[in-house]
Structures are given as C-alpha cells and as structure tokens.
Length: 592
Figure 1: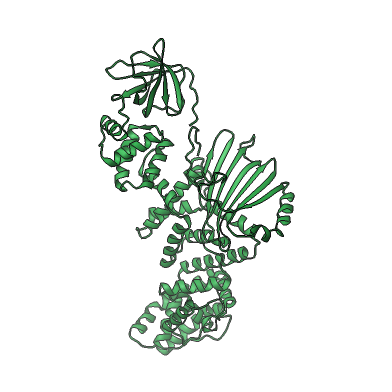
Figure 2: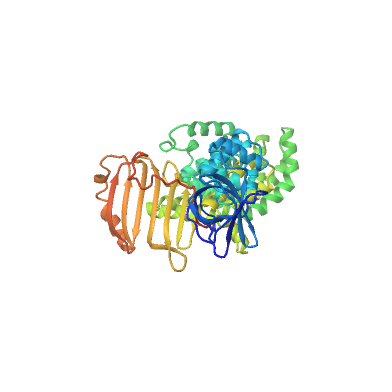
C-alpha cells in the first residue's frame, strides 16, 4: 500500500481511561476518521519513543504511557483539533485471530458469530482498514446472502474503496462481478420480444448484442415473433396485399412456419413461396404511406366496425348495399398495399372478419412504429454485414459506448442534452412498468451501475480502463474483454505514444486467445497467447499487412511473439496476476 505524509498533524495513541499515548509528526493520508486498523509495537527507544507498524507503514512515535513491545493492538482513528488519535480498542491482542476478532466485535457492539468473525479476520489479514459503521452495514448483507465468498469480496472492495455500503451499490458491484452482460441483455431482449412491446430499448439491445441478420433472416424472425404471440397482424397484411393466398388460414400459416423454423432455414425457400424482397417492399410501402393509411383506416373502422362485428358474431353477411358501399371505401386503402392489384374480398363472414382485422391493424399507430423499427434494424444489419472486420469492430465499439449510457449521471449533473440510452430507458421501464419486466431490467441496471463504477480509474498521470464489449455480433463465442493502461497527456487525454492494451477473446476456431499489445514511443510489440499449434506459421502472410497498416497510423511494429497459454504457476506470464474488472488498487485516490 502506498502511504503519503500529511503535514501539520500529530499522531496520539491512547487508551480510554488508561492514559496511554504517543505522538509522531508524520502520518499517512490514508488514515481516515473512524477507521479501525491493526498495529504492532515493533521497537522501544529511549525518551519514551517507539517504532509502531501499521500494516506496511512504520511510524516513530512518542509514547506517553507504556505499551508492550511486540504487542499487537486494534486502533481506531480519530481526528480532533488537527491532531490524529489512535484509540486502542481492548487489550493487547492474543495472537489468536478467532479470539481477537471476537473481542473486537464485542467492543464494537456487534455479534461475534462465526460469519462475522471470519469476515473481520479477512479484513485484518488483508490489511483493509474499516470503520465501525461500515462493518455494521456490511454484516446484514453478509447474512442475507449466506456468507457467500463473492459477497465477501464485494463488501471488502466497497470498504477498501471507502464507498457507502448501500443496497444499490452492493447490488451493482455484485452483479458486475458475477453476471454476464450479454446474458442479461438477452434475457430482457427476449422478454420484450415475447410481449411485442414497441420500445426503443428493444432496438438498442438488439443492435448491441444480437448477431446481424440478413434481410431474409430478419423477416423470418419478425414473422416467428408474431406467431409466438399469436398475432395475425402481419399475416393479414400479407394476405390483403396478395403475397399470401387468401384461402390460407392462420392455423395453416402458423404450422408451416413452425416446421420451417426447425429446418435448415438458410437452404430452404420460404413457406408459401414468399420472397423476402417483396415483404420488405411491403413494409417500406406501409412505412412510407403511414399517414395516408391511418387517415383512411381510422374512419373506416369507426363507420363500419359495429356492423362488421355484428355480422361476424351472427355468422351473417352484410346486406348487399352495405357490402358494395364498404368494398368501395375499402378499395383505396387496399390499393396502397397491393400495388393496384384486384382486391379479393367477398360478403362472407370469414372474409369480413379478415377485413375487420385488417382495419384494426392499419388503424393502430403502434403497428407502424414496429414496422419502422424492423426496417431500421434490417438497414442497420445490412450495413454491418457489408463492412470489413475492422469497421465492424469500430462500429460495435461505437454502438456500445453511444447507447449504453455510461455517462448518464454525468450528463444529468451538467445539464447536458440526454440522448436515449440503454440505462436511461431501463430507468424509465422500471419506473413505468407494472412489474412484468422488473426482474430482468433491474439485474441489467445493477450490472450497468457496477460497470460505471469499475470501467475507468484515473490517477494523476495514469489511466486504467477495462471494458466488456458484447461479442456475439462480431462472431465471437463470448464477450470481448479489453483492458488498457496508459499515461496521460498534458491535456489529461490517453497517450497514444505510451499505453498497453490487453485483449481477452474466445474465438470460434482458435478458442481462448489473449493479446498483449505494448506501445512505447509508438513502437508496438505484440504477444499472442494461444494453444493452437503452428499459429505463427499460419499468420505469416498477415504480418506484413499488420505492419503496413500500423505504419499508416504512424506506428512501428517491432516484434510479434506467439506463446502458449501458460499455467497459473508460470511467473513469466504478464497477465497472470491481473483480475479483470476488479479495480482494487490500493494507496491511490479514485476519481470515477
């Protein structure tokens, strides 16, 4: 732990009622009011002075009442009138960790049961200073989660970083350290899709985590989503536009699509001889003519809705004059969908029922919002599929940092314009929803809060960042983990001349892969860790391309080395001691 001196302060150590006290002119700035630490009297000197060791800090102190040489004590930090006091809690420790922890808990007015004792022992063993109120807040959470090891780690980190031990922060850190971002996004995405909700959150999640789909795949997914909800909206539109035969009923439609979904969809033609291009054009027509379609469908439904429902319920036809009038009024609306083809509707209850459902669909503004969303996804995916790998990676990074909302609170605090982000939409969904999405939405929100607190760590001349980027859209089997360390420029920016970046990948064919990219004065060295044999030989033809590409960016590739992924006992492994996404640096100030 890195300790720094605080000028102008004295350190007094005393025992309440016992009069024991010693002073020193220097004290670590990491000691805070109320903290409890473990210390030892290492040596005694003349003139009532002593060498006191507090974790990794040694202090020369003036002793005004005797302490026992070699004795270990629990101290509580107190600040009064610009003087730091270390209050001795209890007697000299017995060097029995269980007993010493129990005695300390009793002095603090807390239960000395096994779980509490083990937790205090860990804090003391790892040299984590803590405050009484922190321990009092941590213990209920510890018991609530049955003293789980991961829970202990989260609580230790909150204490170590001097963060408030609240339910919200605890859940944020726990979720971030124990959950998978893509899995949480998929859980909520699937629920939104099942309920058929028109929510921009669906599009943001889909474009962040889901693989890009071809036009055909996207339309099939749209149809299967409708079928899963027993929605006949798109089915009725396809029939009216004559892309599907008017004699096909919904049960047959549903049955054939379910068979198709279980087959090799890439090699088979679509059911009912449908063409993905024709379906996309229909959706584009509806989106383009949205205003006109609504303008005609709404009054038609108002004027004819009751008569149609009555005829349908009685299993009767409309009277001849009514049917002629209704068919004439409906014709203009139908022509917008079927490019002026002959309208197929007859005065039969089943045909009238389909016309009624069509009017309901075309009169609903939400339908057009869903169509526009699907078209936007198709366009977005089409552009992504046609990009090269480099541009796909940059696009995914941009998508992630633009829509997640990592700067959500910062923008609110500085009254900046707030665009729609996943975090902002999650907060709205949780606040406004009746609870059907609460569980999945809350879990993802907890994770994102934890990600915000752990993503970037800044110090005076140094920045450390780690990111977990959804990888399925890039064809990866799991998320892309990226960790970066860099000097800062004079302007406080990341230095492009001095930095180190680690990539942690799970590739479909190469499996586990780690890349260590070290940049010093724009000279780049790469170390690739992978267990694939002859990987070096297989990549020889790509190395000149990498070198020339870096030269275009004013970087010089100096070396590429390939190494197997070593065991944990291999001390030459530079990433061995790194713990992804666990910012537990000690002895520095954090600015998140």
